[in-house]
Image (cartoon, rainbow, N blue to C red; front, side, top):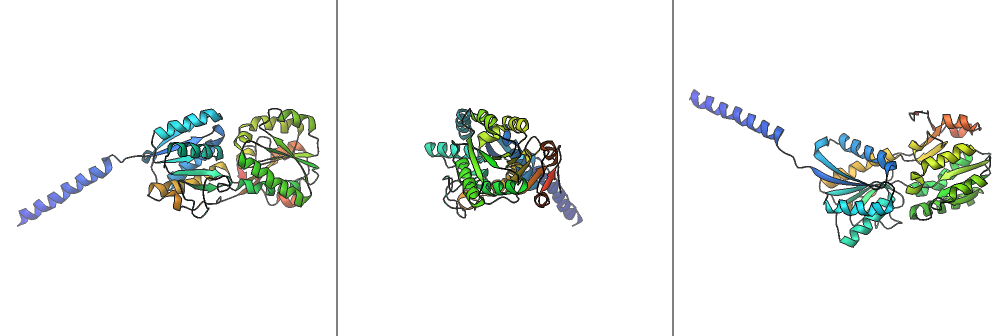
Length: 333
């Protein structure tokens, strides 16, 4: 009798060892996640996405990222999207508006049904990416970064922050629909605020010459979302520094070079938030049924270094509302 019990216990021990070995050494199939990015300016979104998935419990070897970078070239973007589609990923994450719109066109041409998460796009319903914010339908869902609608609010904040400003030069991109929508929102706000705005199209190669000829010391710049505006950050920063012009940007990471203030959801936050969608799709949910979300957080940043360099007086009531950023870009309340 005792022999039988010893034999039974031995079998349990051997079974436990074998099961433990299996679960620790089994090959777990990776989820292939494609990523489309227009250029280097989107890297913070990718960082946020990876961090978000890590915090949701996904180990580094659980996901295979297939990243396609167009290096700010629209023709290259189409090629990279075709390359990615051929890789047959489980789902695709797009890191901006032009990436998402171009992907949608390519998928429709090729009759592809790959789930897509957009990690921050302005006005996704208005530009035809989804049917409805609550029930997107189709293959696309993600984060509405609300930056088009925030354009008018940025003008209001800038006018209150630097009340001595006489004219507001609005940098937008005529070739990007969301940028045009942002300009329209800004013009509408300017009428209500009785402010003079001057649109400047950054897709016109002479825009820098126009600014250099026309900017005065009591003017200000306001940036409207668009990938070309983002890719021209260094050129715009040079104009700002040369003319010492207060500028309202969009993302917190812009505050630190030459831009005085920004108001919006950061690239990193948008990428981090989109990780929830990636997780839910991996778990079997359809993008058609996942409501599009607004940003988890919106920040109003002011750079103390730029303020000092400009040598201008800011409205103290507005500075009390802002998060201040030091030259090393660390946010401090």
